[in-house]
Amino acid sequence: MTHSDKHAMLKNLPGVDHLLELAKTNIDFIDIPRSVVVDSLRDALDHIRKNILNSVETDISDKTILDSAQIFAKEKIKPKLVNIINATGVVLHTNLGRALLCEDALNNIRSISQSFSNLEMNIKTGKRGIRYEAIDELICELTGAQSAIAVNNNAGAVFLALNTIAKGREVVVSRGELVEIGGSFRVPDVMSKSGCILKEVGTTNRTHLKDYENAVCDQTGLFLKVHASNYKIEGFTASVGLQELVKLGSDKNIPIMEDLGSGTLIDFSKYGLPPEPTIADSVNSGADIVTFSGDKLLGGPQAGIIIGKKESIDQIKKNPLTRALRIDKMTLAALESTLKLYRDEKKAIEEIPTLRMLTISFKEICQKAELLFKIIKEETGALADIDIADMNSRPGGGSFPQLNLATRCVTIQPKNMSVSRLEVKMRMSQPAIIGRIEDNKYILDPRTIQTGQEVSISSTLKKILNKK
Image (cartoon, rainbow, N blue to C red):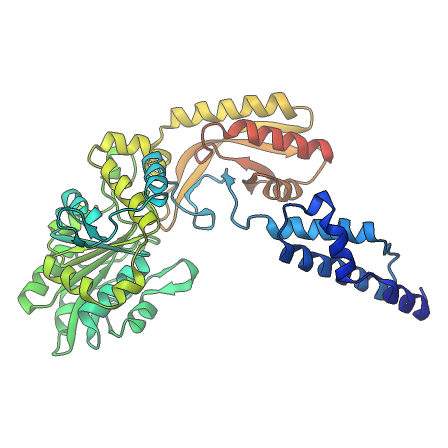
């Protein structure tokens, strides 16, 4: 294509106004907002200009440009946040939204969101109320704490508590507890931003009570204990228990705070999982403040929950930053409904998806795997090698470090494409299906596949393998 040819084609490109008039009568653009149509027409013209300048044979007819603009428009109006099928076996997958909400929580969100509510009104008095009253008594009932408050997430909870109790003062922490959570958020960084002064004691693998005691000075504002929920140090180790730290704090008149990270209201050891400290355990140990997440082992919405002694929580509630970190009515509705289920542990295990996926028996997993295998085999048996294999799932979300959950998976080796290509196509399908690859096989773990999703997985797999 010569320079003059390019110049002529560029000169003959139709204007946006002309194309916009044509789009008004084009059925493909009827339900698309005008601003999106205009942007899409400009994108289509820019695309054609680049093709011309790169000497790519290009049709510059109105129809071709409108067809191209339609593709751009559909992409623009398509939701960015979409449903996916989690077939990875990672129960609390941070990238996939962590905890699934229970039906009660979903129903309460809808009910509260579509109507006015008493979010900050005391119906009995007719005066302004406090939004945290919806969960305060309930959390205290379940944990034994004197008072409670919830904010946007656990990092916010830790930040707010530190800023309230120990701003400008030293906070003593064991070196072995200076954790980093997902997204490179580190305890020292949160502490620095909260206005506290970090004072490290002990070593990475061994910290003793005398280390805390020797660190006490006139500037000491808090002893902080951080539960290592997302890693584990083994071997030649020593650490100070919360009760020991509480006694030292009482003797020295220094408040104690524990960040549990993935806090739990039930004893998982009863269900064959490693024991995790429960929230009630921390409260009973005498900690002044305990913080934990709402969307990890609790199985609720994203939230950071702060509980403890009334004096400390009252201080936190009065902190102006509390307003900046507060939760909205939808989170509050979901959290209240989730917490109510914990009044009956059996019901909580059955109805809170996170608990159900973590505690499901291997027998049930095998039944789910057999069903998935049967459906996929019938649909795609000639297009791939389908098998069943015993493997491991993971809790995820920084919970239960190093724990492997026995599972039984469906494995797929396509005959007409690579495993990596299959993974991409499954991920780009609608709905998106996220599996994993091990030993050059595409793995579907039934632990995190919800009831009824088997047919969708199978039909999507069939379409992909048939297209080659």
